[in-house]
Structure formats: structure tokens, C-alpha cells
Image (tube, rainbow, N blue to C red; front, side, top):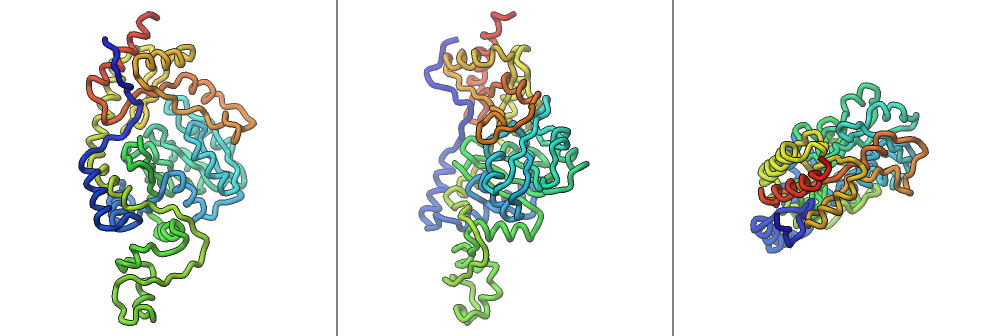
Length: 382
């Protein structure tokens, strides 16, 4: 097979005229910051994932941070899996907590309930359970011995049926290569009204958003009806507000929400493409390639190959203009959060991992190309 001239990305977003028109509408209507499209995106996303409330934020990382601040989790112990992006290890440190990193299960690379149980502390106040590659974390098993707060990290699971419903909150990612990309951004979903209101307030320095004060959709609406700033009690902009608690600037803006609303309509089709690629990899790749558990989102296709071949295969595919990656180098190996204990599963399995290209911009020919060259590499070993 002839080597392609361009690099086939391991991950990338797919957009078009619909996203351009949506951004154009926001530019022309004057709402570039948090406005009507953020509000619409929150409502539509909450409905899509079966949650009562949603708060759109700047990223999944800021979403997790905001949840911890809203819950008053600080100077405590927080458990998270070693097979994850740096977010889950660093956010606890932002809140003066101990980042207590646990080992994973071999089959799905999710955090291991047995290791969670072994490493629980008296001051463990939260567990961050990552749905690795879109495969649900074993939250039900953890609930059998832990009744504390659980953040369900749904960055990879938009949308795996039931995702976001097992934890006390779900935190989602719309970063550029996620299944629902907006460039960057995130969402917090919850069924707890009080927590929802707290998160709304904290996401903008404890201030009602400008859009809320213009539209009359505000916590202060009842007070404004009798306020000297609004003596006639009419909906509309009020310049006055009070700040009673420490807040942050973590809100999403309409320019990103505009993309999100379009991508939400395309999500089912994009997931169909990802699942089709997953099915073909499972059926057509050489048996030496270990296939991952089935994922409804296929955020990553985390194949496993013999350790001695992993890096060689990465370089071989690079020479064929196929970009691959590794998800992830275990968090406990990073200097900033190194742990003083053994990780027998993660330390073994991550050295076999290779993430293959999976994204909605791929064609059947692209998938053919990846399968051909991986199988070609392993032909010499048979």
C-alpha cells in the first residue's frame, strides 16, 4: 500500500458550516460572553444525559475544582485512579488536599474498588471516578463500602448510557478532541438543586451573570421587583448586585456554547462512526493486538501490544504517517504526585498501551490504512 502524504491524526474534531453559522450568529447578536446560548446548551445537555441541572464551565478541570469548592472539600484526602489525565491528581492539590492515587483493574483500566478500599483514610472526603475511555467506572461496587462524595469524571463518556448518574455529580469535557468538542469547556450535571445554585453563583465571582440581570432570569428577581433600582418591578437589566462569598471566573461563553449546541445534534452520528471504527479494529486487527473492552463513546481505542513492541510500533506507524498515542502514563509516575506504594497492574499494563486513530473525520479508507499497516508490522512475527 502506498504511504499517505498527510499525517492521520489519532484524535481531531469535525466541524463545518453549521458551527461557523452558529458562531456568526453569536457575533452578530452581541452576546459573546455568557448569554442565551449557554443557558440553552445547559438545558439541552442536561436533558440529553438525564440530569435535572447543568452548569457550563470553562473546562472539566475547573468543573471538578468548582465542585470541590462548592462542597467545602479542603485539607482532606481525595482518591482518584492512576490511569487518568493530570486533572484528577492536581485538582485536589488546588484545594490543599492529599492526592491519593489508587491502582486500576486490568480489564477496563478503571480504578480498582479493592485498592480504593485498601487506601481509604479517616479523612477521605471524595473519590474521583473516571469513566476510562468511556467505560463506566465501578461506582456501584465502591458504594458498597463508601458512602461519601463521588465525582464521576465523564470526560470520556459523552455519551455512554447512564454516564453521570452514578456519582453525586457528573463532570464532562468538551475539549477539542472529545466526542462533543467545543474547542474547550465543560459541564457539571447534578440532581441537587442547592448544589446547582451554589455552582452557578461560584462560577462568576458570586455575581449574577449579566445575561441573567438583562433577561430577568435571576435569583434576585423577587427582590428586584420591590427594589429602588427597579421601582416598577419590570424585568430588565439592573446594574446593582452584592457579593457575599468567594467566587471564581469559570463560566462558559456563548461562542463556545454555540458550537456545543451544533455538536450535540451531531453527537449520535459521530458516535456511530467511532463505534464502526472500533468494530473494524476488533474484527480485523491481528490477534497479537489486544482489543479493549467495548466502549459506547470510543473516546480512545486503547489497544495493547507486547511491551517490547509498543514503542517500535509507534515509530513504525509514524513512518507511515499514522499518529498514535498512549493513554496514559500513570499519574503516580509523575514527580509532583509520586506515591510511596506499589501499582502492580498499572505499572504492567500501561507499557503495552497504544491508542489508535479514532475520530469522526476518519473515512473507511483511513481505517483500512491503519489496519493494513498494523497487520503488516506483525506479519514478520508470525
